[in-house]
Length: 157
Image 1 (cartoon, rainbow, N blue to C red):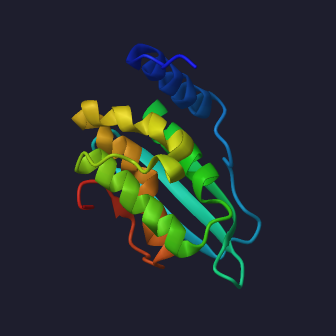
Image 2 (image 1 turned 30 degrees about the vertical axis):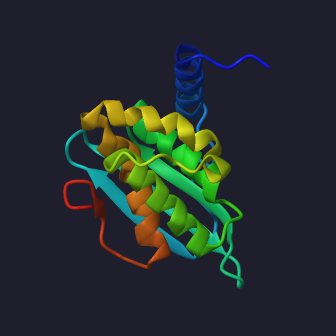
């Protein structure tokens, strides 16, 4: 099998991001969420709300997001919902740590668990867009930790 060159991979990742922006998954509201958190990026005005339905076993049974944001913010939220649905809270928090580490600290994502999330790694080349990509992730972390504060990308680390 031929190796994929970096240009082809970049094109593939761009297509994943555009697809999730144009047709976001799990966009809307849950009828009876167990946890809800809001996030705000004052730099560009992106807003997101994450709603979770958890099972008694701590598994994310359903998830949704709503709000307004740029292509990166919306695609990241959509990819997040697909990545964490069906995961335990600790697994979802570990994915948050991976995404934060990849985009802020430049650590590589774990190929075994990243899947389509790898499409977001290219955002680290555009420092002004990192907060857009991480907004939904910080909001998810607040929802999982029952933190009622609005996730604000200016104050999150």
